[in-house]
Length: 229
Image (tube, rainbow, N blue to C red; front, side, top):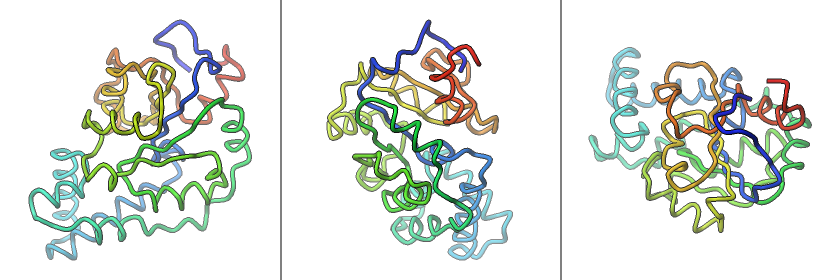
């Protein structure tokens, strides 16, 4: 784990905030690729577009509004329920319980929560498939956020209050660097997972990132073997 600050003492923290997609599972798993493919297919059907046109619209909405669903709401007055239900209906048959991840989460002190631009239903399916759902006490999702996606600063305050977390003793782990800025502004220690996909990197060198790890398991391994990375 690359360090922006001198040391990382896990025992200091009593709150752990995890992003879901491309964080709980690595980007290389292809699970989010399924979500993205289904987003494109949904937009193709709704707007009678070819795949290229649908993909262009999808990414444009994402970059302008933080999530494609929010863009559909703002620009096309679309109810996001059907969209979110459809895009999260992914195949998890290849996912099996991950004992290594389970053990690592067990060793973390304090409360563990999910903070996602997806839905609690989607998070629950993912966590159960990996056999780690019992670790998480709370999920703050896009519906509870009233479809205000990260990095909207307001929802970070809501998360901290509703989860009962002290920002100064909390850690946030996330694959999109820009989403860590409001966390750092509130005194939360930040860990960016550099999955080496371009869309996650725009603020790679920003001072609001305290630590960088390759993926979640690499971060956990660095706690056990602090000189390995």
